[in-house]
Image 1 (cartoon, rainbow, N blue to C red):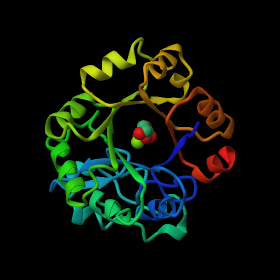
Image 2: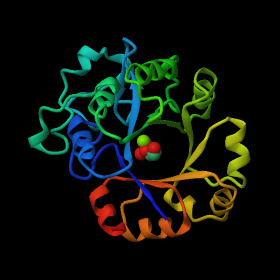
Image 3: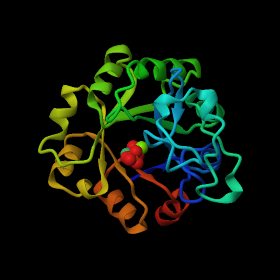
Length: 240
Ligand code: G3P
Ligand code: MG
């Protein structure tokens, strides 16, 4: 059975996560797609970064929500990883979508609204996706399932996915309630009975974050549709 590979935050094993360098590397690989995380700036620009603050992945400090895009652009988002990436700046969602305009990769946009709600981010993300004519290629996921309800109301045709860090007893019934089309579960959760039951019911299951070849092979056996990995080339080798 085919197992789709998504580069988690780009090729984050070799490049600073969620930067154009990490996404450019992914765009050249024969994989299904990429995953990225988004937050909102003070001037309502959708930017690609994992944390609420820029402290861990830049030479600056503070919350994304308190900076304008122009201010954020003054920081170096690469040197924390390696000196050779000192020119990396925070990407906007639009820039990353544009990079993939000429490829067939799917783009999983994770709305990081579980800690800060970022009112209106759902509509802004959908606007960017529509502008790049990528409606068919995106998957919008979140740990904040209220965000997914908003996505479903505005754009019911978008593939949405509920992220889970915990084990539920009945995933399909829960995601139908949101509604969301797929479930994204953590690696430990993926081997539980409830995920097997969901797969048997025909649910689409994707698993984060899978960096070991033996786990990728086990998940392929299990019949999940996709995995998110920091090291897509290593996983490609495992499955070839
Ligand atoms: O979207 C899958 C995965 O990225 C969720 O966790 O913390 O890596 O964003 P995190
Ligand atoms: Mg993520």
